[in-house]
Length: 255
Ligand code: SF4
Image (cartoon, rainbow, N blue to C red; front, top):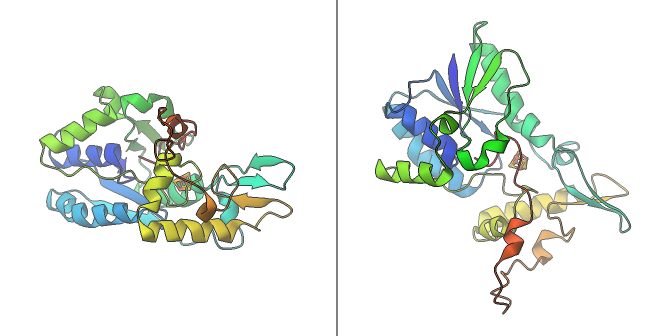
């Protein structure tokens, strides 16, 4: 059994499109683990391109964890939220990727693999090669076709465009604590995404007393953060603050 893990970002969608157009072999399923908190642009893109994949014979499956809400009693603690009690700062362990993306995908695979080993294709490109890790379960073998093709993210975009296919926006949860400043500005540009991110930031605040929880590393409520670029603030230096935060290190988020 061969499946593609589809995050609806550039790289994983390029994999699905390559399989659809015969550039890569057909697969048994292209599976999207929906966190239920993806950016609006991602849902719109998925709505436009799911029918295209299906028309090209691709079996598109969406799975999700119905308990994925960070606002419920324990859900907020799944986020790698930033903590502060006014004296000490820290960060919670990230459990959201497993709970919201990996677990629902594995549940589906277990129900459909008929005892077979699953070859899971992950859309990791050459510029993100450090994120490629072997599977931690025996029945799944990870494979990275973009690495085999030596394709970068830019190369994936070029391939999509040269085939007349739209390039998807970056995918992630609206409130992902791994966002860098540029990503937060991007979230803010969508009123719905921004409202959701603010709502979740507020909702998790008191979930781990005596610490307050925040989605932004400044440990300031999201709506109070100045997200202007340095240039917008009147400084002419390079916008280096966009590079200081790590992106999600797992191969299944932010693809
Ligand atoms: S995008 Fe961020 S918040 Fe969402 S599941 Fe991945 S790491 Fe967690």
